[in-house]
Length: 334
Image (tube, rainbow, N blue to C red; front, side, top):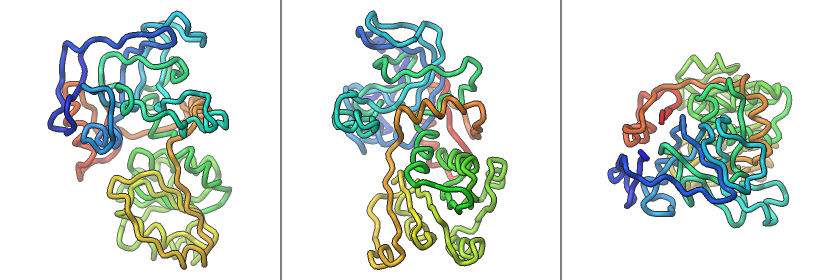
């Protein structure tokens, strides 16, 4: 089969090969013919060596959707050849204390699909049946590919932050992968959304206010909220916006973070933290149960695609994540 694959870490080592062996199907696995993948910062981390991977040679690609083309003989789920499916991007055993508590994304014996397993930047991928979820036959492939990470991550984060009706949510990176979805979820929850972006189109997703001057975020949030500041702040970027994030959180507010693309080590004013009684929340992906909830509302969600690449252009697709002119999602057509 055709696949993007590397034997040694480094984006420069990523190759397109046409003679990669198809994945072996075990009794409890499902074989998926990949149709579309979202390109995600995780893919850069995997290919660059920022996270350890196995096996080697290795195929990246964590946001996967496609159609079933093979089923192991002991697969018990209601899955059939031809079904449209997405892949839950967390490997989990279903038996540890985290899994039994419903927190399968924190499985003590698990990891990330495409890091501790081969990913979806290939014509085929085989995954355990527990990771395969059916989606509607008329679902848009762009939305389907965005559900496992880009959509699930902010959905879980806002659930963790307990965003409430009429609260102010400040979204940094609002025109990025997760930011687009965070805006839509916040509006469904009845919140007032302040989007940090230079793109006016985020208003079409539901943003109530747009802050385009990045060096004046704190000042603008203060004006919009009449001095109250934001109830919830989302940081999906990392250290690059940390100071603005922290200063924009109001008294008894919540700062939730799930990204470190610009760096992970931050300075924290502990006195300001406890004086304002701010809650810092780390959020990691989301649960399989939440992903099922998202499938049910998937037809109501929107995404903006900036560029589409072919499998042969995988290296360029990953590098495009850092393009200054990037204006929406990057998708990989397989």
